[in-house]
Amino acid sequence: MGDVVNIGPHLARASEAPTERRRRAGRNAERLRQSAATPKYLNLTNPAPKSAILSEDGLEAIHRASLTVLEEIGIDVILPEARERMKAAGADVTPGTDRVRFDRGLIAEMLASVPSQFTMHARNPLRNVAIGADNVVFAQIASAPFVADRDGGRRAGNQEDFRKLLKLAQSYDVIHTTGGYPVEPVDLHASVRHLDCLSDLVKLTDKVFQVPSLSGRHIVDGLEIARIGRGVTVEQMEREPSLFTICNTSSPLRLDGPMLQGIIEMSSRNQVVVVTPYTLAGATAPVTLAGALVQQNAEALCGIAFTQMVRKGAPVMYGGFTSNVDIRTGTPAFGTPEYMKTVIAGGQLARKYGIPYRSSNTNAANSLDAQAAYESAFSLWALTQGGSNFVMHAAGWSEGGLTASFEKFILDVDMLQMVAEFLTPLDVSPDALGLDAMREVGPGGHYFVTPHTLARSASAFYSPILSDWRSYDSWAEAGRPTTYDHANRIYKAKLEAYVQPPLDPAISEELDAFVARRKAEGGAPTEL
Image (tube, rainbow, N blue to C red; front, top):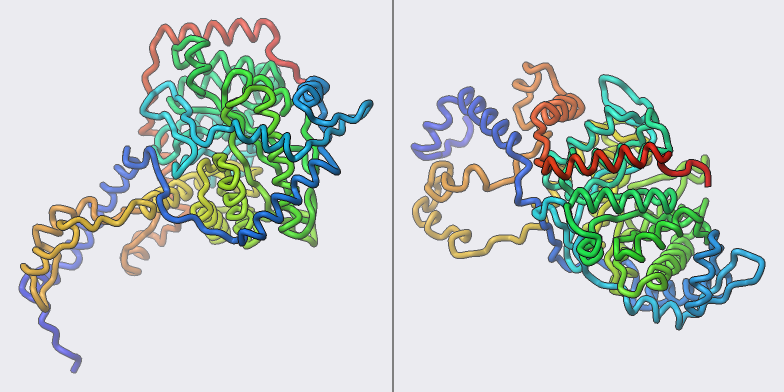
């Protein structure tokens, strides 16, 4: 005979009806899942001390080596106007070539004017996002050529799925900004695609969004669409950054024309540029992580310095995206130990310069499986510990960024909300210490029905979107649903429940007129 435990009268009554208790728990869990997206996930901060993977000497070694790269090797700058601006600022432009070299003193002078904090303004002021310091902002996946869900499989990007992904981004407060085009809608002609997409971003969401650096014309159109969407003057928008663009360097050691045009158009108008080298150790950067970080830092500092040559004080972020490749195939790998190290090191470098830091939630999985979860979990762990301020591809990234997955979006939202809960400081107020509850229960009792517990029952713990906490028998009886099943069901339910954010009819009319006029004019160039 086993040990006899006195569980107390209240707990004894609770144990008399386990089936009903499970049903009630299931109903409560479902109710909490339905309300999982709450305003408490706005304005996230990460107050915890940031991790360091580099010693002070190691950090300084990478810093000095990257300045040596800029001084001795230089960067190929594939835009004459950019080279002219760099030369005017004091850079050494080799005549007849694209090569530009930068004295370390010039780099230091340019970095001195970079703002350490700024705010990006949305058309809904509640969706404004603070960048820098301890702030954490999550942005949806961007620029995937393919889209996938379990029902339709993997397919080319299209406008219908593009709009669905925007609606999902709007539906969760933990997604603070859209990341750009979550998937590229190739059924729209490239010359006018940006007009339809950016118009949809204004109408289907009320969050900050990205304009692609495909040409100066794309940027100028994006600036006007963002201005119309906010209903502000050109002057107010210049005072209040409302748009961001990603400037990827063309690694190794190149900045191409469209990206440079993006910097010129955005920085000159005080809009946000995110300079991000795409450095893959063993492919587009040295195979050693230290060497890859040196190259990342050199390329990032060049782009950041150029924003300040265009306009002193223009808002800019330091982007880190160094990972490794599968050395056998050359395929990019993400969520690896190497990626984790470089994410944390990138945060150290950004903090050294006092510049807001961008990183990404990555994985290389081809399906919603364990690999998708653990590579993303490692990415999120590293960027949280590393002090990332702006997280691109935070939700929906699959197949190394080639595919925007509806089910992966839901999995990521769940993990992002867990990160947000983890970052919430532990409450140690007198009430939270629970002494009165302990006095009431005393030794050998339980806390299930104390006033202290009942008052907090709906909010005491995070209620996950996807985790299935039923007993094995209950789960089997329900058909053995998987995480994939839950994510597929939930994304569809969210789309059904989507509510379009209000937009002034006059703004909508002005926006439609602008888009129609620009389409009639031919849109933007498709060949540069």
